[in-house]
Image (cartoon, rainbow, N blue to C red):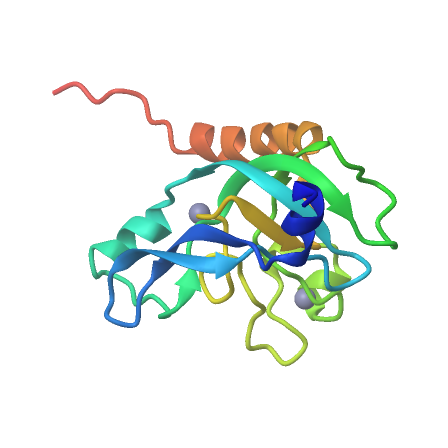
Length: 172
Ligand SMILES: [Zn+2]
Ligand SMILES: [Zn+2]
């Protein structure tokens, strides 16, 4: 039998790290996600950072949602794109933007999608918090950014923030 055909016809599983209903980080198994919407991008995840938010949940300082694949600070390579995706192609290196934005709220309309509160003011899904994230080998979503663009974002956001926190040394 042709192994390629066998691979396509079988439901493929992947190992994932979920926040369990019992309140623990657990190794589990899920079906490999597939492109569902025309604007989706399928990504082979290469690395995911462990965020302070993950640590807060693991140490009990913040509640986690049971059954959700955690992880949201990830890089990977595009392997497949939906028919409406024009700015990315297979082989592109990308950084995940875990925050969805509605495009309709007062923040989105002012171009501040990072502050989106959702069309009803109750927020939007965030990968790795309240929808499946990137502690997994595969991830499908519409919210991705090219690595090059993300590199500039990091400089433009973290550097001024970090510099603002600097204080001259205090001497007695
Ligand atoms: Zn984070
Ligand atoms: Zn919005």
